[in-house]
Structures are given as C-alpha cells and as structure tokens.
Figure 1 (spheres, rainbow, N blue to C red):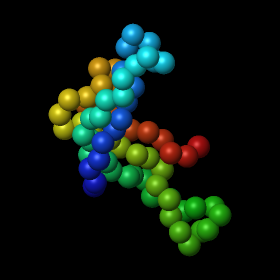
Figure 2: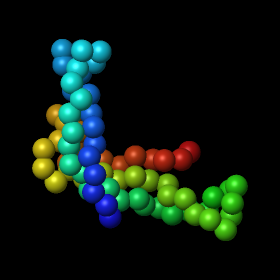
Figure 3: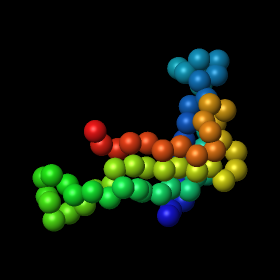
Length: 69
C-alpha cells in the first residue's frame, strides 16, 4: 500500500471555472496478471483508493478503478 493525493476539480460553479482540490488517499494496486506483450512480466488490473479523511462530495470512502479491458 502507498499513500498520495487525489487532485479533483470541484466543478463549482461549473468545471471550467472550478477549483482543483487535493485529498489524501491510500493507494493499493490489485489483481496482478500476466502481460500479453511480455508474459514473463505482470501488470495490475485494478487501482483501489481509500480516503482516510475528507473526500470529494461525489465519491464514496473507497473507490476501485479497472485499469485494463
């Protein structure tokens, strides 16, 4: 696990005029799998973020993103 900042545009009053805000996150890479272009190497299939404190209004406390199709 690692930690970092997730920088998100609040889109208020609209996205072009919004403010970018930073939120602390814990980061975990998940689902290692073989990489087709280099079978002897692996890549991760998911990125999992958890917000230990404040977070953007539209996001839950934990979010998982799929990295590959």
